Length: 126
Picture (cartoon, rainbow, N blue to C red):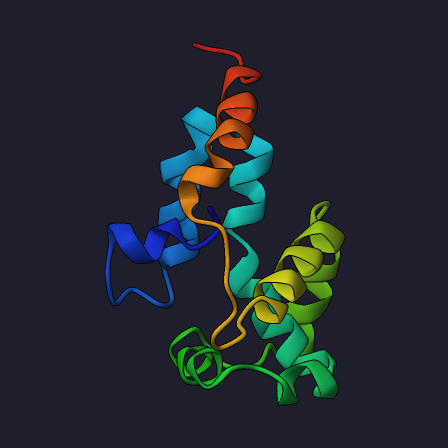
């Protein structure tokens, strides 16, 4: 779900986290949206603070990092570290990057539908 913004606004590498968060917020809740949104910020953080992680970024992630603002400044990093979802955002980002394996067979979206439906059903309706 974290990259749904790419499908909704193709080519918006820098803004796809915000776009995706807005798209899932009502259906999947605030927490899921709060994790979708900062996964780009988490990439910028890791690019600035973890040289081993940065060295393993896929070619596509390295390319989009430039349009996303590049590695964080130390001031940006301190601000991000104060985010209540900081650790969860880093975990999602690390999983995102680890999943970029050329030729890896993954389950189609339909496989995840029951999980998505359970999360959606648990969200309060306005």
